[in-house]
Length: 249
Image (cartoon, rainbow, N blue to C red; front, side, top):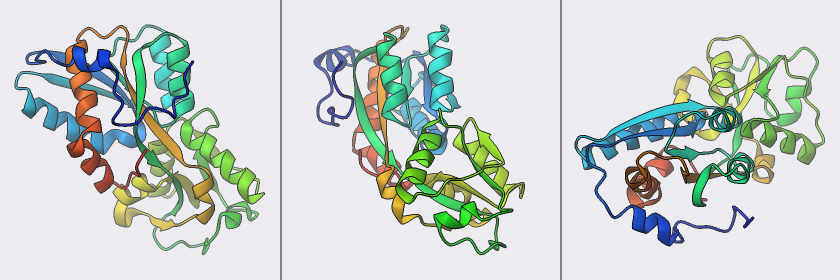
C-alpha cells in the first residue's frame, strides 16, 4: 500500500475529481470524523449545505479507532476523517476507502488544567508527580498514541487515573474539575477558552498527528462525498481549520 504521508492537497485522485463533477444537490451524506474536528467540521457542514441547497450533512464524531471499528462492522457512511494516519491505514487495509486518502491538517498536544492550575504544573514531567491526577486518551486513540510518543521523547512515564476513548472526554474531565491535568490537542484547549488553563509542551513537536480524509467505498452518494472532501481541502476549509488552531498537513 502507498504511504498515507505522500498525498497532498494538490494530489486528489483523478477518480475523485471525476466523481465530484456531478451536482450533489438533494443528496445526504454521513461524515465519520475524529472528535477533535467537531467544531470545525460542523461549521463546514453548514457551509456545504448552503453551497448545495437541499443537501444534508450528518456527522458522527468519535475517537478515530472507534469510528474504524464501526465502519468495519458495516456502519453506513460516505466520508471518513481520521486524527492520525494509523487509523486511516486500518481503514484502507480493510478496503473501506475509495481512492487515496488526502492529508488536510495536523495537530499537537498540550497540557490543560482547571482554571487556577492549583498544582502549578509547568512541564510534562510535573504530570508524573505523586498524587497528580492525570487524564489521557487510551493508547489506541490518536491522542493516546501521541501521548505515548511524548513519554518516549521526555523519558517521563505517566500513571493516569483515566484513559478516555476520545479527546473531548479528556477535556470534559478537566472542565468538570474531575482531574488535575489532562493532555488534549491545542485545538481543544483553544475551544475550551477560559474553562481551562493551557501549558505548552515543547516536546509535542515530536508527536505531531497528521489528519487524512477519504471518501468511503460504500458511499451511497459519492458525488456529494467528493465535494465535501474538496471543501475541506480547498482554501475555505483550510482557513477554517487554521482559525481553529490546526496546523498544515
